[in-house]
Length: 228
Ligand code: CA
Image 1 (tube, rainbow, N blue to C red):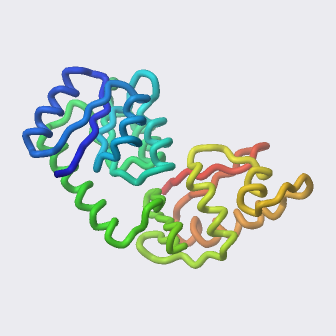
Image 2: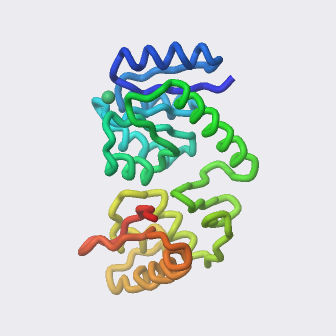
Image 3: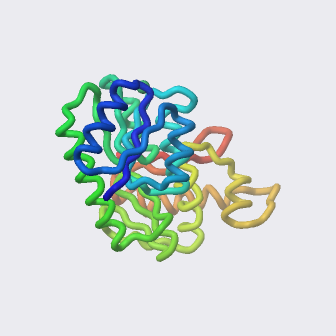
């Protein structure tokens, strides 16, 4: 029996989803705000999250972003309005799918089934801690990066740099931090090495696959944000 965590502050919707999902045979957990949702997601390790975007305490986007550092649990976002930028943001932060309210319960149930199945199948050949962004996956156990299912050959440092940036997706990371975390030294001088490796990664990922991954944040450093 799969366990589903509903994070939704609108009590009527939360209650409705709880009843419908229980009726379908799922075990259901409910959280009424973002902070509680994140806590429950980390503590109870549900098999899937239905996550509302507009939440008190902590937004759905933030829940998603923080959760993705620890877990690759499938996340289906609920958006109140047809707001494209919210959806893009949510998908960037690692949500697997989204639905716009109001939605037909049958469609949500279908998407839950698909997301659970996909996750099970991925789980058969992916390891714990695997990071996903769009068509890109990074598996820290087998040290492989795949884009559109094809393996991308990276050197150790390229891999480590991408790993760090993906694990901090949506955060602007300074060159000094990258030197310290990826190259493991304090280096007050020339940080050109970071720029060089970012260029290598863009050359191996962005150019051949027509995606954008590592963005330059002027006068700060770099940020991972997946764009197609
Ligand atoms: Ca809400």
